[in-house]
Amino acid sequence: MSLKKPRASVTGIYGYIPEYVLTNAELEAIVNTSDEWIVSRTGIRERHILKDKDKAAAFMGISAARGLLQKVKVDPLDIDLLICATITPDFSTPATANIISHAIGAYNAFGYDLQAACSGFLYALVTGAQFIETNRCKKVIIVGTDKMSSVVNYKDRNTCVLFGDGAGAVLLEADYSGSGIVDSILKTDGSGEQQLLQKAGGSRNPASFDSVAAGDHFIYQNGRFVFKIAVSKMTEVIREIMIKNNLSTDSVDFIVPHQANARILSLVAQELGISMDKMLMNIENLGNTTAATIPLCLWQYQDKFKKNDRILLTAFGGGFTWGAVYIIW
Image (cartoon, helix red, strand yellow):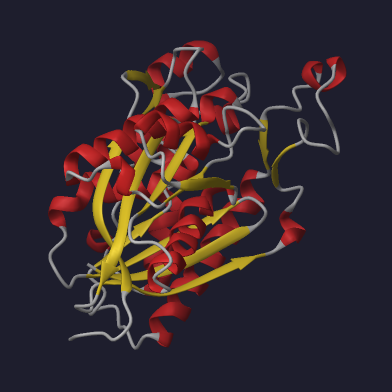
């Protein structure tokens, strides 16, 4: 198939995972939990943590983007745009994307951060794709990077067991052969504001002695509520994009979901009637790395994908934000 207008195709993937591994056994020593409790409720056995206090989301994003450029043998000066999805930027300003672009030598690129919580990578991917599809840009890098350990309360067993640190990056380029991003559905519902949030640090509740003492800069999640709505919304949006594109459970080769909780993903597969063999997961060893989960999953499973495979990406995050992207590999 030859297209008159290009699709944005993923032509390279790379990831960065910090060396330090935080196991469930170690968490047992610092919070009231157990390996059995964590695994049975989340499917997570370990997560990677960026221990260096002088390194943050930008460092991981730089590592992933630099590795990507080396892998695909692209000159950083040829990059037109870099979008960074993150909820843990190094600073409120400048944008983490600016720091990454400068560090990798992408001096001709413009860039900016995009914040959509755990759906951030999907939102950034679809945004970047528009620049390819309209011929505004030839090469676009999308980075998902989060240092969740910087906003996790390690006295709260309901959240500290979930999150890890990491980064993933993909290169988007034009494709006229039929491969690439075919369709996307992105959604948001602001009524979820209080269910998953950092209560302090923004302009509504700036940092103060009181906010720090209250622990309001840590991530908060109403776990049971978020669990139920995540299953519902991810199932709905996957079903919607399948119907829209005449896809059946048999014709979908893989689903690459946001790695929030193994039980969530199992229930979504069950609701859709899709085999768990098609639901790719790495949550057991990485935990929830927020905006980095999908690119890291793509990176780790890339050898499994064949040309023309039909792949669905899906996520659900705070806000609420959620969506699905249909890609022909």
